[in-house]
Image (cartoon, rainbow, N blue to C red):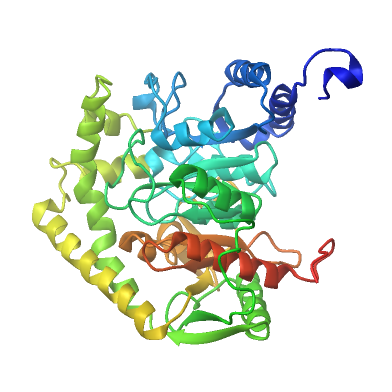
Length: 464
């Protein structure tokens, strides 16, 4: 850990020590099932090479969701039909982070084929929450969120189609970014919907989250994550009138209302905004995009990487009955419920109208971000709530409930950031900030201001 002058034992071994500590932590929390492939040998060798090269750059450990390619490691996408596929090259988003000093510790567990919100994977085991292993981690990027939240790695990569970064980030009490559509390269990622899919980073601090975004895109801010926002400027925050702030589980409602009150007295102005029509657009477009785009995108992916299986074979081998049934019936052209090209064309039209509606909302209201709880409920016990859960005295379906607040902006291709809210004795609760398309760095700056305002006065906070 120290140089030769201090110990006489040779050059510094910072990267090797970082990997060793990460592997030790991974062993201590192995019950979380955060990883499908833990590459101890490869990460150790890469760390040793970094240390031999020297140069003073800090090396850090990264967890990568198992549908994002890492050269030489299996890329299962959480499904048996891809278990033998080993990519020869890194996805561009992984290559960018490696160039910035990341050492890939391994590939993380996930909801099968990224089509779910609990990460209850029948093949590789359910993923436990990084704050409480008895609870589910959320999904579909649950393994990455658990690896970050439990302290195994410094940061992680997930993917997001309708909330698969924001949901597990919120439920594990960490920060997550779904970037604007097209901001991150999508090559080397197992597809679900080419319109809605994007890689997205997660971290335990907002500064690191902003740094990850800068490493991938090359777009940097000077100093801290919020440096681009004048400190004396009053924030204008969109307060949804419909859906996003309704029917919340009690701990979520308490944390949300406390945040609204605190921000309203701390150099922020709440601006009521109409959001019901955005949810309606999403209902007409969201799933039609996924179901209409999946087969063609997956066909190209399998052929392009010479995997040697057809889309129908991969879907037929799926271990999760819900995933197999949905894709087999509604996403394959041979399926009885396949929506067909006309439904996909209609969804594309609806999405364009939805994007215009969001743009008009931001332009007319002048808000810096629209805020709401990321997820209307807290994490629930493992193995019990794959299909449904209790919410305010009713049994509700798990999937649409958890994506309710994240899916509309994801369908429209807007950026969103999840920030952990202060809670009192409950599992973690996340605050979602939605920004205008392409406004990712500004949204991160707004998130930094809000995060500072919410956490001022907490134990250990030394900010004035």
